[in-house]
Length: 176
Image 1 (tube, rainbow, N blue to C red):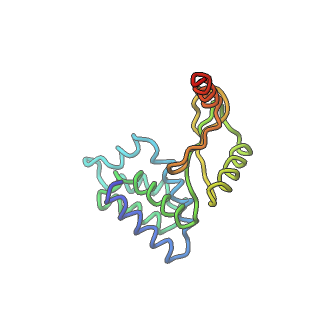
Image 2: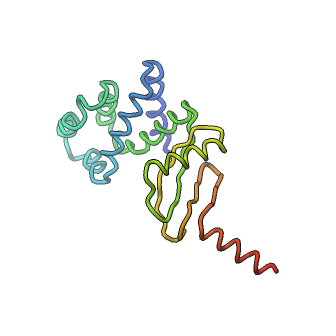
Image 3: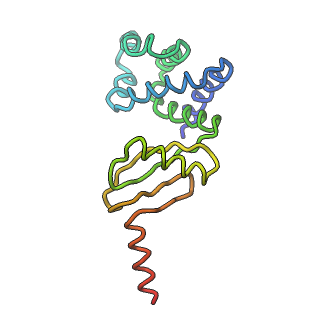
């Protein structure tokens, strides 16, 4: 993680703690992440030949009134300081700081098929019990699993996929 992004994220997080608005800022940062998920948008706001006034105008139309005032001003600061190119890393680091603060572990669940919200919540709950913390998982589709799921959190892998079970069976049969 870039040190610049980390410093900006920590500064915003410290402000959120001081203002007792961590959850609000986290929701705002999620909105910002959705917008800046596009590489073209990051390039637009990072373009050195484009005047800051134009960037601010676009930012104003996109975020003013949609996010809290401090978060909006934070975005303006990133444009002024020419640090907006780090926005994705800043957002990721901020979310990580929030998750640490709230005791949430983040990972991914790999499935051969899409999971609905109820299935995802059930998996998060079960893994949360094993991990001893609240768990947030993002879904990744991998048809090579054939069936079942594989959950990855930190350095732990919980593999309940059909492909893993078949491979285990194959290894056991080869040992005999």
